[in-house]
Image (cartoon, rainbow, N blue to C red):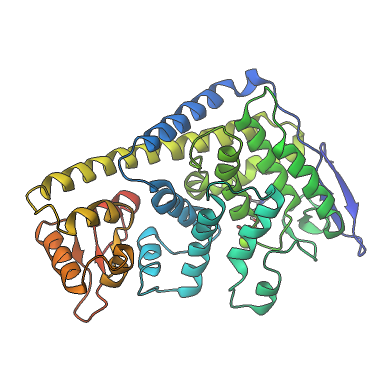
Length: 377
Ligand SMILES: Nc1ncnc2c1ncn2[C@@H]1O[C@H](COP(=O)(O)OP(=O)(O)O)[C@@H](O)[C@H]1O
Ligand SMILES: [Mg+2]
């Protein structure tokens, strides 16, 4: 029935899948999509390198990816919601949902720090720990950062008992070690193809109880950067997967059934290209916003906090006065900060989102709408 990998029974007779290392497809069979993905991702990577404000990848694009990658798995926190939650107000309609999405973004921050040298398997478990360590369910929280101890599976009418079980817990450590070796290896073959195959392998091992999709998708940009294929961790899959989860899951399954990986690699390439093209467009528009703001604030006196707020707000478009004070590290008084923000409101750069009090929430709608065109009130 199955062309690729094998099944092994666990102690209760459940047949658990043990994937083999996927073979590289013939380059001719993936060439077009691979070229398009490489071109799109490299164009985004280059544009990031010359963008006038630092850290846009982590602060904005990885956050957007966290929203989409989690959204593909059922969370409902939007980019707008995530920024609200990450302000000092920690405001959220659904705090548990927002916490999970924020944790994905924090895992990116943690693992994309320069000089990060954890093994890929360790990185996977660290992302998992971030995702679940504060879960409301104590059983879930206890498993955070650990490999699964019970078999996990998914509905599959073709499988015995209609459940397709991923790798058995007793085989997971060895399978993950093989995955790590495959992921870390480098040769003359395209790195993008290797990492597409690595993602397939990771999902079929399913090493952790839950979060395998989010963990695996986050590893992709981090790994491509670690291996020097890109300067930034900017090869994101989340948005395209969120737009068409069925396509992504069907392609994962189809490669297993046929033992043939060119269609899978083509789908990953198309998804990477799609996200990178959308992100490049956003980045270009963001550059336009930044240039307009600088022009609009030219006449403000040189020592005003306004000039420091402008680049800060580009990557932190939703904030409270408290957040702005933390950023300024005591260099300005609360009063001066208030005046600066007031000035930005007068210039139409920032709007106040809610009523009075000390903890008001401010937003630069032009920036937020680039990443979330629908949900800002
Ligand atoms: N039939 C399948 N075969 C292999 N992998 C699958 C299959 N269905 C889903 N997946 C992968 O499993 C992920 C879901 O696993 P899960 O552990 O629930 O992670 P998350 O909680 O992040 O969604 C999907 O995003 C996909 O990557
Ligand atoms: Mg899940």
